[in-house]
Length: 134
Image 1 (cartoon, one colour):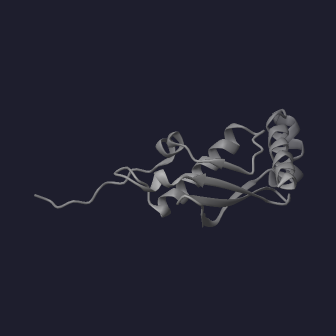
Image 2 (cartoon, one colour):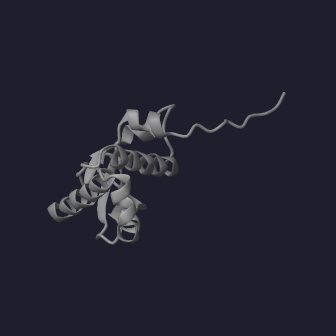
Image 3 (cartoon, rainbow, N blue to C red):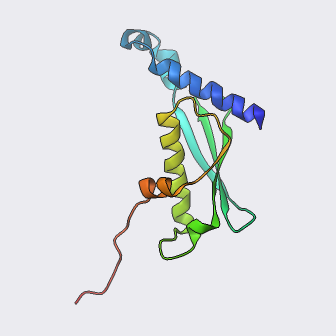
């Protein structure tokens, strides 16, 4: 796990260093750096956790660097009650949450974190309920 955290730190430092460059400096190295600075987040799947929650696994990588796995844990409370989220919906919410955290905090270096109600509120796509016409 520490190796994964170290890879995430290196990935995020690279993004941060690139963002801090002047336009002329980044333009002069466009051949090497622009393609290398592309980050990739991929959904790998989910696992059942003790207590009825789910762990959503993602691969996060920068350019040619070795991707690291990050798990977002959603407690069972998210899947119960009138405002529950569907399992399929949770994967998308977790994906958007991870992208947002990496984008807003380039020093973000954890290999797992818990989904929060604030994350769900921010990244949940509200769909129009289909009903009968009168």
